Length: 318
Image 1 (cartoon, helix red, strand yellow):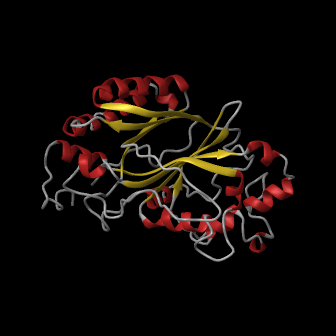
Image 2 (cartoon, helix red, strand yellow; image 1 turned 180 degrees about the vertical axis):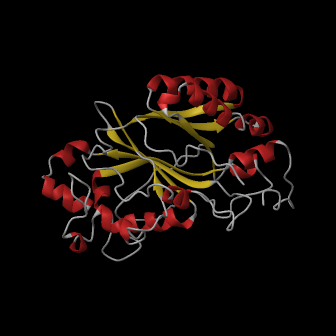
């Protein structure tokens, strides 16, 4: 049975640290070996600082996957969706790797990142080093509860992890879509609560669906429910706000067992899925960083590091 990276389905934390990384030329073989040690670093520190609830994820981008693991590729792995829309433009990143570290202690995140960086620094260059934090009782900087429809309990695994029946080689892995959303906070705060709720489609206080949401065709919630039924576990979000005195926004992470779920959701948000429906929150945002990755299972990374894959080895992890 494949062993997944535990950070995929981990519960929310207080602090998040994120690295976007490019790999230096000719370092793929060495990096294959080192990536198997990253979960070991996280697990060792998680045991030592057990109260911090430390977890981590390492993911490989769609464009770098074939360089790192040329023998096998997740069937649905492709670049972050690029759809032309009159409503919105997205800036894409070409980072090769993505690393997420989360815990309830900033110092533990720092220790984990330092040990990870010491291990891989001869082979990579850091493109972005980002930080996020838990805001109030799990809210975004809009003041609204973040992802109120997120699956809970065992449904998190169903939503995020590739099933062995569908793809035995990549079982326990996950498709990851990451983007940095910058909020026009000043103009957002000029709206009344009623106006904000009309844009979001759910109540600011408790996250319950607005009674009139069926009539709000350009709400954040309606755009999502066109693709994701309220009770379906198809996507797991792990979002965190980020902020300085001058910029505010969110680091958005969407994990899915199926590659096409986020693509359909993104089309809906941009108003391309159903006429007259788009995500009205995007009128107050811009996205200056976006990329698609796959989070392989620990089992897959270890097998690849041992050289157990060939072009005909798709049966190895069954």
